[in-house]
Image (cartoon, rainbow, N blue to C red; front, side, top):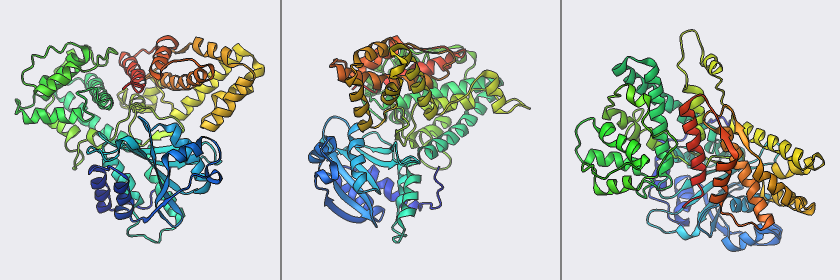
Length: 533
């Protein structure tokens, strides 16, 4: 993890926050962010779409379409801007274009804008992308902040303000590179979120113990409620709550505006969302809700995984939650605005080892599960308790490796061990160029039909699935391989259809803890809805 020796000034953080929140609508706004707010030099020089820069393949075609340019820079460091056509800012095109540009501009930060969204009043969709090479210079990791409607910029502004050079115009390229690595350090954001989460968890657990005098229930119910709240933030990312990516904050604001009875948000508002709306039991008769809220609740998705079903924890005690706890979540936390959940970006697309969003993704549930699922008893460390329960959290990089290794061995046993080296090349191909070469080699041996058959037949079972990290990891690997097989064999299957088939027919999990299974089910469901509009 990079060591941050430079701390951005509050003024720089505020400048960046104000710019991002304005919002950013076009290239000129991004230029102002880096030149006016952060102190970089204005450049605005087109990068010609030539073979000596982009080669003769996909990168050259993309360059002709998006016409990249050096927007700003500082002492050899470049900020490169490109506009991509289409209905999404897909990672594949970003990787192809950036990989080629890095050969000419090895120190660069990339801005990818979705062309069709430029100049919208609500802001354009953009990705600010940092590419970090591995220790051996291979397997580049793409780390990104996302801009656009529904995004939250508290964390992004704090991190991007690390790039402020208005007061250090003579900064050397190496120091600037260190700042860049720190700004896009996903682990630093994850660690800070988790530390804040533990603070909120302790606050909630203490409240619940005070009203129940039941330490076990207070612990378990606090964990369940915060998991439910986190899933609300993942779900609203798809605009499935009234088409509003900020539904939860507006839901809370509507409650306050309606001058409801004091401390009734949990019982009269949140429980209706949990147990009626998400279970298709909302009857529309709650006249204390505004019309737009009632309409949103009536159209809420059916979540049948169990996390939003009333259970023994809900029935055991009355939580008696007062409004000041939700003020902590939504309005003010740790002495400043906004609240805990409102200051972080949430993304439903789980990061892979080579593509990461600087945001909170559903893998965080796994970390919470590993760290907070047990009550620390006197004389026992958390490690002791986790070992007793068989709970050990595995980082995503290790999960990805285990998934690919086990799948490579299983397929080699079915297709023939003499093909094992080639299967390893196919399964461990991450970059588009590596995938293209491995897929072509497999086609030359006419192995795609047989591989496709076995890819669809293989079943995976995790007998202690916990919150589902291994199952999600295997879903992502199988999905990538089966998508490539479909391309090679000319098979017509949408990403949604493919993931639904894999989840429904190929992935199985068991765990002794019911709530963990519910979380695993919903994590898989989130990876399915990523592919829906």
